[in-house]
Image (tube, rainbow, N blue to C red):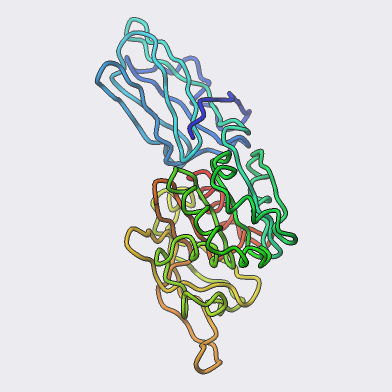
Length: 329
């Protein structure tokens, strides 16, 4: 599921320190900047050079910059990886002279993406902003998408599968098949991003990985979220670095979004907050305290779930968070 491709892209802004020929590069140092297909800088990408049994590596910072020191003379391959995205760039160190790479960007077709469309969400907006290629299949109506989700061989053609909120209930007639297909897909290294009402698909494939509000075996009990803006805490280090803050505003533009109480073993909370929900017992609104708003877990591949949407009603904070979530899959 790794693709070794790169697209060099340069910009007229933010390049002073990368394009200044007079800047001295320390001996044996490879320095550069990594960007997504749309030119946005990528945080937390692993960058490494291997020679013999030695691996020299670095991580990109919030501005996409990296620096690897101690690289010996010779031709080397600089490898970059972020989630399913990967590229390789050749460098040559001669007589101890370091090398400065121009910006290199992941290609638009660096990964193979499937989007199952939904009635209430459009992750396609995020992918379009990132200039990523993808295949879309209608999840709002019909059952063609069910055959794909139930077949791990068809799913294997994709690095990432996006499950939008508001997928039709056609899959429920084949719950076990769909759950098994998604589970095997992730076990083989595939990645899934699901939002809001797609929680039922996640629960079917990975029971216990996420503790949804109410009885997890009932598809609708967790749909208790209230329309509001939530001041959230960003726990993921890369996301916080990208935002320049450990705080973000999350907008819920519709009622009845799926609330989460916690995660199972091995589930990481990325964003948490104190959202308002309808209390199932009293029928009144109440606040949950420090509950997950976005989580991820690994089963060879990665599953990422957000209680919030990717629609146009996102805040600036959410735009940045969603972009980072896509790139890490």
